[in-house]
Length: 339
Image (cartoon, rainbow, N blue to C red):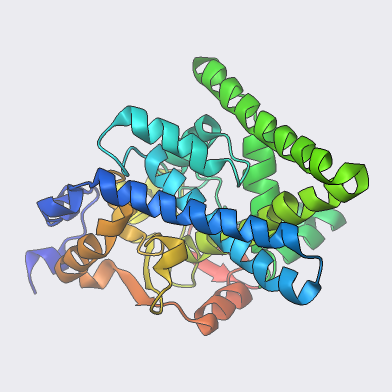
């Protein structure tokens, strides 16, 4: 048994050391081309939705719209990490632009995602994203809270959870810390102006009744489907029977960022929309790696510490297994249980 196999680190240095240098090379052209492609698909999808009210056209167009809003959001997420481009200014502009269709305020996202989620991944009482309840907490829930938990932790609940816990609570209702309040307020106004302008343009184009329906078709339903898509993405990245959450005193960066994240390989064409975000472990190890270099980084990490990397193909049965078995969590033992 090698030293690497017998000793589990507490920090990330041993993992960072095996990531090849080329994984940090960023191409401004490639980043802009990815963005241009996604915005082109987004524009064409909106045009298609505006041109028809036939449901046999609307349904596939809505599905594409939800996926492409997710794709734009993932590129914005990368830019918000300063990972998509070398230029901080370009990252800042692109992050705000790419997150507008998903109605996310960038500075709000940076605080909750970059600082809290990445800083305390799977740490009890700290990481708010898919934070599990204990059996004792569930027993103390009101009837409504229990029903809501059963929905949000079911196979169909990812969108409901993301909309409430991440978007509503952290994007809309969140009270900014004074240090970042000005920047967060500015980005909230930007998103509000975008949404209002979108609705006003729709009404100007089609009248009040027609315009409101147009706004629902082009903005609201794609947003709802985006929440379902991205909620599922976040769930499978961090929730599985073999992944445990940790009490604060026992948590460390290796447990959170390496043992607590996944490397999931999609079928051919998958990353046209998801931009390698499912290859998630190296992103948690080092947020500076651009999305298109995550596969190379993941292979290097997996070769060094295969015993600690949760790696597999994306499979429906794994998701169903997780949603069936991962309802409540015992933080002391690290064991998931059903109701």
